[in-house]
Amino acid sequence: MGLFARLFGKENITEDGPVPPEILPQRNDLCWCGSDLKYKKCHLESDQAYLLKQREQAAKKACGPVFG
Ligand SMILES: [Zn+2]
Image (cartoon, rainbow, N blue to C red):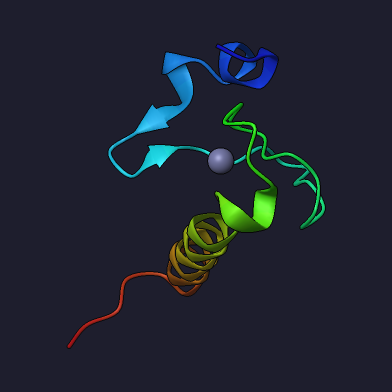
């Protein structure tokens, strides 16, 4: 188990999988999850999907409940 896997232990595991750190690696850096893969080969896409979802949820909260 890598350093990052220990830092981002079970507490940050959600139904969607591990939560990405606030500061993300560069595309060619090793992924934060400790897989020894490059970030672009590992969590890049799932992080982008996750962050997009977070942004959508934040936008919904900011606008209050939406009816219909
Ligand atoms: Zn990863």
